[in-house]
Image 1 (cartoon, one colour):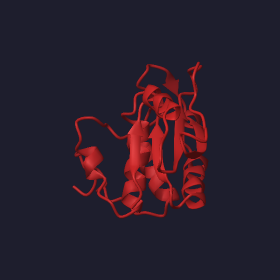
Image 2 (tube, helix red, strand yellow):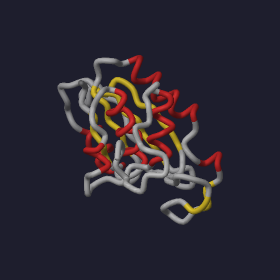
Image 3 (cartoon, one colour):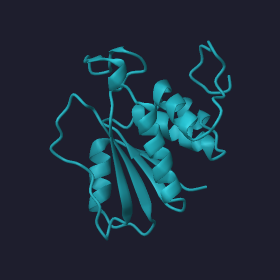
Image 4 (tube, one colour):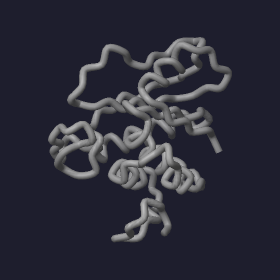
Length: 163
């Protein structure tokens, strides 16, 4: 199984500045209400083969996002975003996967949990971690695009898949 790494935006920029032996692809998640001064980049030294830029709010449903902006349905992760994730993973099947959002806690963790589950891994490592709070909307939309089954029980109060 290829390695999946979750990063914050500053960690992703720092990663891009380094020299890496293993080839990787990056899923770069931005907030549509924010203008960024820095973005991830590809160089021969950092061995990033491709970067998929996505932009959607950190919210699981329409209403206030984690930054207090009012997110509409169109501002959330869309199926077309998840389909682009699937296409990137299919195009680079042997590359490690770097996923970042602003803080590296919610949106990136939700996408990572879905990829991990689709690859046969256990997403509970992310859902049970004190470091992450996977965005369930991102998790479910990405799972659908990857053709994986949502193991969460409908109406379950736990944040852990399969419980």
